[in-house]
Length: 303
Image (cartoon, rainbow, N blue to C red; front, side, top):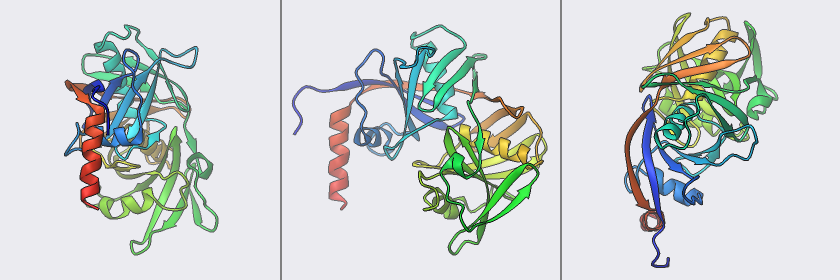
């Protein structure tokens, strides 16, 4: 039983191209996040509802303006979120936490630079891009490989669903990108979960399904680690573009069409930058322990 003192958290609901977030100010209020609290907030039936939670905190790194942490809807903490990074900038400015532009944000794998470019858009420098099995903690032993352009692809058998030919891209968090003929009919619901939780990926993976429209345009769907398919995935868009350029299929910049809107990704082989929308939907307050307790009781009843 909890005590009578309610723990009230102020929050803001935001989205970037339909990828939606609950954003929390951990600078001016004490936010002790746990997997249970994250799941309760993200629950679309009993909580606020979100793909991910973003927690803004004071930085640990001397060169950063803020630290921001990302929690998936399943309660797991992850390394990076491109759409979340844009919302982070908009949140910091709208909440009066800082007027700096650009901002330097500390994430779990380093520092990224973010610019608020206009009333609707934010541009983010996405940090180091890496390729291959080590970049995504992937066991490639015994798998068939092929060289396509400058990229090495890996053929991963999917039980009952044929093979997936994957580019492996690490943009702080891990991505496995495959090229499909048509994203509308791609088997995202069937094979996305298989790839995401395949035992060869030690830390799970974000599964991207990319359709090449022309050399400067793609359509993309992503089954995200810990969240399922989302309307847009910022790091997924970056991973897809980088993989497409390395395969010789794309040229920078690339317009990425997602279910939730359009993102633009530019990559010169070193610096990778993504631009897109970031919008505030509403703000509110929540008694986090009451909400967490309520969700726990609902789960217990369904067992």
